[in-house]
Image 1 (spheres, helix red, strand yellow):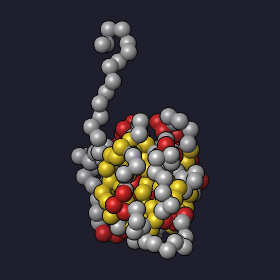
Image 2 (cartoon, rainbow, N blue to C red):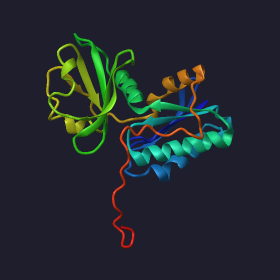
Image 3 (tube, one colour):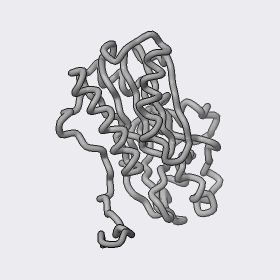
Image 4 (spheres, rainbow, N blue to C red):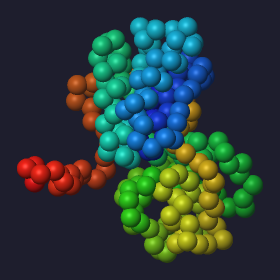
Length: 231
């Protein structure tokens, strides 16, 4: 039984799975709510399923890229549970999980091969994105992209590309081509993580609980505090 935690985007989502099958899920898109609801969701979900933390075999957490604060909250919670229970910690790439969710929502009726480009908002016209094929293989590694008309130009003629995520909407007026598709109302979710988490659990691919850190992709730069005496 694995606890799944997704906090890399504005969505706070947790799920409880056994042998890759979802037993329960809790999630909210309320802004800046991760620190208030994450542990409440976990506690409620375990109790509703008749389990206690000691019944967990592992915790899988979405490792990023994404929101610096959201990632820190999710990863610190996952590490704390794993350390206290002496169970393995599994990390799942946020974009990889989103691409898997996109694949689940799209039935390929296209006349060209399909690529999935999950997009996580990185402020301004920048997004964290990458490309995955229908077999969930990484075609273009996840990176921070400033979106313009030439983004993904090397794939336009030979592929249909689907875009989704909280960073996709702001790119809609820039990424205009007959081979581009946008998946509406798509959000990151722990419901996309079970298969990826189960595969890593079965293979024994775990993180070092003491030293594991989120995959921020870009360095965190703190702004100057706007408090008298702290500048």
